Image (tube, rainbow over the protein chains, first blue to last red):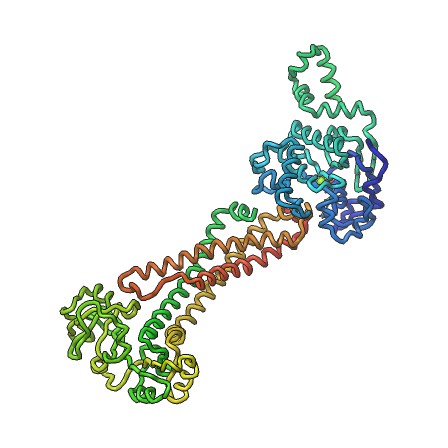
Length: 274
Length: 365
Ligand SMILES: Nc1ncnc2c1ncn2[C@@H]1O[C@H](COP(=O)(O)OP(=O)(O)OP(=O)(O)O)[C@@H](O)[C@H]1O
Ligand SMILES: [Mg+2]
């Protein structure tokens, strides 16, 4: 799955805010095309800062960023970069409340010049991809938190970006909706080869990705793959609907159908200790 | 999208639309009235059949225009002139409480042809008056009845119609009688000047000749006389000042509404910018909203203004005095003003929206 083409690379990245806060202090991060990775770390460790720099929402104080072969510092047209090269998903979905789900997905496509019809067609098929075909004409206040975040994902990939950046996309969701979102990311990564970078607080969310980067005081403290796919899949299972039901102490009908009741205590034990 | 952004604050949008509408309504109403009045005067002067109308120079008000009959004789001597007819206009008290326009006219002149007698007959010089159709209805008089004008009781000889509101709501008496009644022996207000057919192509030249030959008078083509009277000009400059004040208030209101709307949407605008929207597109979005807001205000205002004038026109006192027609000019003017309001009111808020930094706007709360 993962080939070795480098998609994004930072070298000695430093970000100092006006109040002398050294939010990033020499970060060297390399992301390959098709990777699905997460960035963890305590509050204030610089996770959002790193993401904003990668998405060209802010400029570094020192160091360089290369994305898709281009040095960010030398890009003249940042709007073009933001609309085509990166896709953003925010912690708060940041959907426009007066626009329907479909119209929200259409927003980034105003900057690429296609007909109104085509824009709408593309938005609808993106909504199908995130499983919201029937909610296209709903206004965001009438969608659940998880549905809103899935609309935001559809919006982020509208212009087929090279990399999807998400800042705590599950931070404001209950664990079931959070699992749905992670599945949506995983699907994009598997089926489209989309490179996905997620900032998160939740170790289970992080372990359901392929690689975890831990930031501490503006530096990378650890950067390792989620070693055994067995554990990764277990985390993904824990986040899934079935896993959630099990964790709540209930017995899903599937267990009865398969006659696996005797495995239940052990399964619960494993999930709880993940 | 623009529409929905406006609609999300229904009360605020409606109030702003109402404010703009009132401002535009006043402007349109004043414009319609000014044009209606000028049009009436023009119809009156052109109705006589004369191409040129002469009045005293530099008077503050049409009513004060006085010309000696000597001027009439001099006009008659100009080679291009076919005939000259004097006219004495006076706003006269009727039955103590009311006023109407009394016209003193030489009944033998061609200008009298304009007054179509529909009932009874033309007034005789001895104490008779002919009433306009609307005046006759308003005062409820038929031929044979009597009516007190300026303290003098006159017999109604007949009823005329001209189709011009000012005339139909007034009365007509022979010129010498009017001169006696208002103590203006040998004086008239205006002269109708009919030009010989072969000189009709050179009306401007004839008008200039008249002005050059006779001192202390003004001469205009009858068809544009109204716009040139001091009455209409004073009215128009007053209307201009009132409009300017109203429109300034309208622009400030629009600006306030749009600024508030930009501030409360800071995060949304940040989102749009983070998703790659260019500054220009954000600017266009806010400006469109402002223009649309003012367009609504303008349309409502034009309707309101015309309605207002029509309403005034319906009251018996003023009935028919103003020809209300929503000429394309007033309509276009109202719309253009509204769009200018939208542009000026929206420019600064749109600029503010454009200057928002995406990251800071996203963090805003
Ligand atoms: N615009 C700013 N101006 C000044 N300081 C800032 C700004 N943004 C972030 N910081 C500071 O930089 C440090 C890193 O912030 P950042 O938002 O990257 O942390 P984070 O890892 O995303 O934290 P959290 O998990 O709470 O979201 C923090 O100490 C923060 O206070
Ligand atoms: Mg953060």
